[in-house]
Amino acid sequence: MSARRIFSRPARFAAIAPYVWMALFFLVPFAFVAKISLSQTAIAQPPYTPLFSPSEGLSSLRDAFAALSLDNFRLLLSDDLYLASYLRSVVVAATSTAILLLIGYPIAYGMARLPRHWQGIAMMLVIVPFWTSFLIRIYAWVNILQHDGLLNQILLALHLVSTPVVWLSTDSAMYVGIVYSYLPFMILPLFATLTKLEPALEEAAADLGASPREIFWLVTFPLSLPGVGAGCLLCFIPIVGEFVIPDLLAGSRSLMIGQTLWLEFFTNKDWPVASSLAVVLLVVLLLPLLLYDRLQRRQLEEGR
Image (tube, rainbow, N blue to C red; front, side):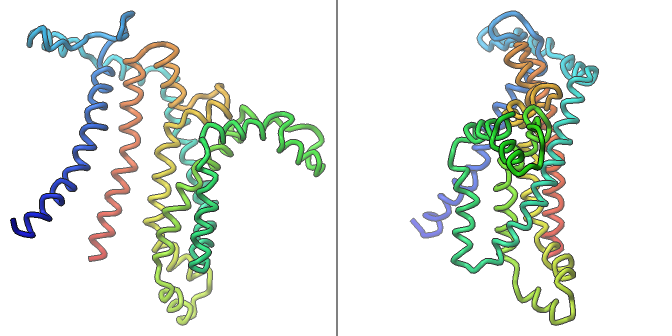
């Protein structure tokens, strides 16, 4: 057997593996969710109709396909609750991502300018808190932000407030929890991009008379845009569907789409409506992914 055949076969399997992974763990489950979203609610187990039964022949399958409808998607468009949930999720995700970028960029920039042996330590300091349970960390914030919690005790001790401030069940508490939880997802891609920048480019700009501010905005920041895009996507997409943080810290007065989906699925037992919510959420999240992919392709073509 030639060396080419020995090494080409594993390479072919490695190239196929991502497609197999995508088919088994995304396309097949999504097909089930899409089918349920076109079904009708029923008091049965499972709680929807029609059910496919290949053992009863092709006629039953044709009847089942004929019974599918878009009624659940029409309901999403007609009920303000769902539209408000989608809008609130996008606004919260966009605002949180902007805050994360404003906080994460200076931290990543400072880490990238550290001596090489200190960069690993700084990276560990960012990552280590996230080796603990996500749920426990959010419950810790519940204790910190409660009426007699640590934050109010500090504010009272410093005489910054005269009475305890209400933090829990507010949007402020939710943003604190989201920024705390997703900050490493913003810092890490920015740090990876900033460490790859050639110092000679900034030195050349300085030799040509550019001020530090001009060097940053004309050289450093444009070259770090791939890391900015990756960090924003890594934060924005999961925040849109976030359930735990808004449910524990923001209360239930104004729901994000993750909370609405959970209520439909587990409380109302309305699997078809919950599935249609998930399908629309996926479509909404595909838009920034496609935009980012298009920008990446354009940058690669311009770099050739």
